[in-house]
Every structure is written in C-alpha cells, then in structure tokens.
Image (cartoon, rainbow, N blue to C red; front, side, top):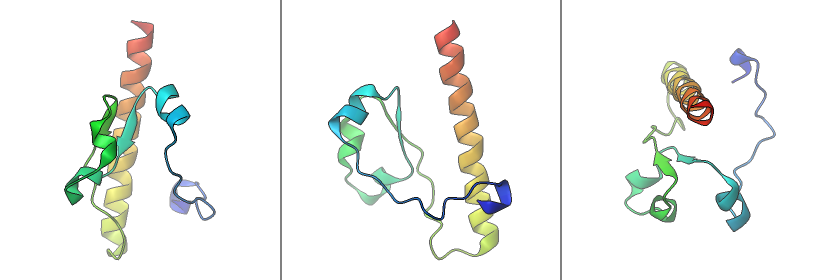
Length: 86
C-alpha cells in the first residue's frame, strides 16, 4: 500500500458493532463467504467480493489483489455517489 502512498502499518481489523452496521450504506466483505459461513452475509447491505487472501502470496500477486480492491472500491464509490444524486 505504501507504493500507492497509503500507510496501513498501524491498521488492525475492527469488529463490526450494531451502530456501525446500522449507519453503513453498504458493508463489503472480501471473501468471508468463501469459508462456508459468515454471519455478515445475512445482512441485507452486505456485498461479498470474494477477494483472495494476499497472505503468503508473492508480491506480484499481492499487487494484483490490491489493484483489484482499488478498482472495486472506486466502482462502488461511483455507484453510491451516482445513486445519491439521481
């Protein structure tokens, strides 16, 4: 991510709480459903992108995964912003 100018070295996963879920327009999971069971998939506003886990992958594969996430995030932002202005 530093290659893209984003420092995530101090970031840690955070659990979803009820307030966050209620206030969210959409919740994106990155492959939660692929493990067979994910409670988040029972929520109406959840999208599971089924993104491969980059852990342990060669750098080139990690970059591809990162770029795919970036592409999807930009697409989602466009979709959300266009639906609020329509």
